Image 1 (cartoon, rainbow, N blue to C red):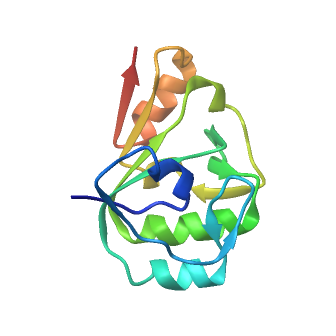
Image 2: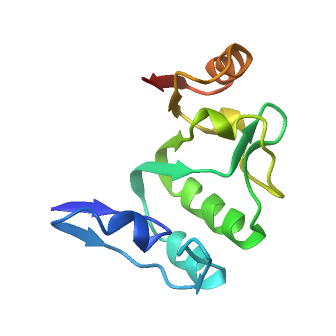
Length: 135
């Protein structure tokens, strides 16, 4: 079996034969479970890899979201992970949401697409552990 820890049940549904762990909390428009109940549950978890989507990524602001409560919950999940990978297409570069989830140097891997502009490639390549570009 595959175990997936996600804030969004919608992300896990297409995968068959898996264990889904729900943290509890309030549901956001993106179907994430967030808030103090979710944060408390996440503090007790230890995960090898966190694959995280973001609203925006920026050289100064880092990885961001427009939802304050979701940012707090994502930060709790981030601290429970040994390795963190952000998956974000090139349209996310230069977008700054209301709240920072993580600084660029707190992430081990960024996976983006080959449309990512050269400046963004340079900044992410120097700040994050590793930049992977998918064709």
